[in-house]
Image 1 (cartoon, rainbow, N blue to C red):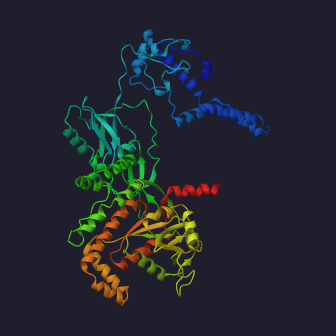
Image 2 (image 1 turned 180 degrees about the horizontal axis):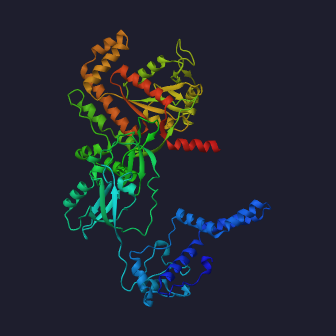
Image 3 (image 1 turned 180 degrees about the vertical axis):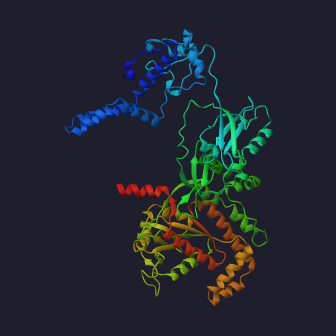
Length: 620
């Protein structure tokens, strides 16, 4: 019978247990007739009856058998998590009271009754799917107890585990003194058992009652008992009317962290001991996002025994995207130097370097640090906290372009020259375009691509230059077609660019691998290595000039380089795939060569939007 045709609600009057069971079965059968599996079977039968082969007749007979129909209906109910029969706290008390006519009502023609008055008269205890809402509701079993509601059921559970933590957190109800289960960590022993839910009350732990004890006593008891291999809990199941999907927390997704995080320095985290520390660029597997402020995640760590990535640890707490974005916006408005230093460990923000002021450079450093143009540039940049990523596997005949980014003077050009000298046929630097006139002994397509100023301005406006600059009235830039020619030839395109143009190259079209070259933050070490490298790779004239340059002047330039490195990491660090510290030139080149070969041979992480864009282009 269809739900719209059923206008009466019949409740049993018999006091026997058999009559109650039969009424429940009728209710279940009535609810099962509404599930979509029946409609699907009817459509299949109509299609099969139009055929004239014997196999179709046999299939029609099988689909009409009651046992097979019941089996498919049960499977469909379990798959859809449809449970119309409520499990009461004390079923025997209900069966004993069935002979009392005051507890069972006959309600006929439900559309003539006021639902609000009916719910006021009866203390209705139903599941979510059985709640009275409209007069057109389906047949529903209603049981009422006069002036008394059923109490939540208590149960005793036992969790057997190893020496790992239980994987739960609790909170105290100040009004009632109850110990409430606040959080269940994905991957922990409590989560794997499936016996507890968030919101349950914990009454006893291994026979030790918790109610009435102080907060410190409860914490000590829980910490001591949770380290045992067998834990017996006496709980009150408070949220059993809703049936959560156990696979909901397993719908994880991978993200790339765009900031550094240390839970022990976070004043807002509810439990620092379960926080997950990570660095900028770490790959995190987000497992649970039910809490709007705190997600549960684990690090995606490459196993030494297998080539794929595995999760082998209990999830920890990380700030959600919403919470971290609010923090970043808030810190931009902080004016106090002490507040900035307090938040620096959490946000990885811009902290003024401990420059040693002197008569020669103190005033210049002060002006550079508080330049208003830098603040405007900082505010324009996007707030990036977590970036969804996916693995990209190398393709034969295609190599991702390698882009080097770093502060001025850090050595990007020198590293590219050494890399191209290593294997000129494999590693190539794209030739730049320029609008200036060709000088004596310069050749077109060898030194530069010499073009007109009008053509170059038109291409810049069209967005065909991935990076460009204007020097002494002439344009210089790298055209996207030049990069495509190198990539299509099967070579590795290696070039450096200003970080402010990364948005033009950081697209699904090129899929670049961006390497940030960072100077060492030890000032004495930085000065020593720069002088030594300059002697090794410069002529005698420049070496004599370096000898005349004062160490104080060089120290000031190195200060600027370190400051610029800090600023680039804050503004564009979420786009960097690898950071190399250029301490020793030979060691840095070896690490660069190893990184480039890794990109050619092993899977790497790219934004998931790049893969989605490629799929949409393939469909078109």
